Image (cartoon, rainbow, N blue to C red; front, side, top):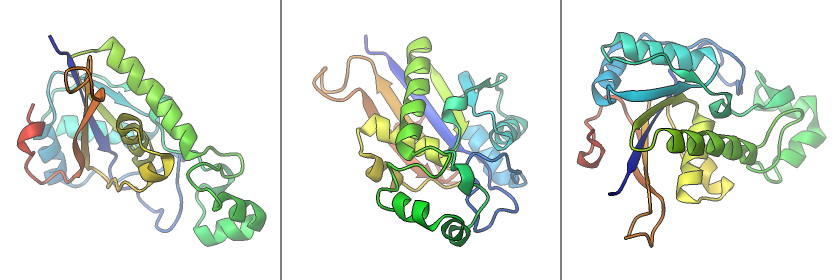
Length: 218
């Protein structure tokens, strides 16, 4: 019997007061006032699921808002491995401010932005690696279950890059809007009678207010 483990990724609610700044893994406030969006997510997400978030308040507040909108949910497990990318010395700065702060480091970063790390920060390659560890751990521990991960644009891109075997550069090209729903399934034994991949993609950047495609139904 094929065992399917369903991953539902939701990016946190929009952040407040950081327009034009790279907030990264800083703990910044978010706006959970869009009641329609949260009601829609509460209707779409499965009720009997494992929940995980990062340690940042914007993921915890987003999870709480979905629950308050009508979805029965357990207390989420906190996983630092699905946190947003740490941009080190560049966090809370604009791109212009980053360049002025350290022109040489800025130039070096842009030689390979998916693979190079900002000063005292981490690269997107690092994000893929730690996100992969969390996904593989929970897929093994909770095989056949629904797993809801309320996390970040960077970690969701990392998850999709892992599942689809993408290069870091291709992973960074994926658009993940706030409150979007993203779905991948792990197929124990693989697709195509064992000759294919272990993961299938069902949705990327799905707006909360749009109906679910038939393949994504619980």
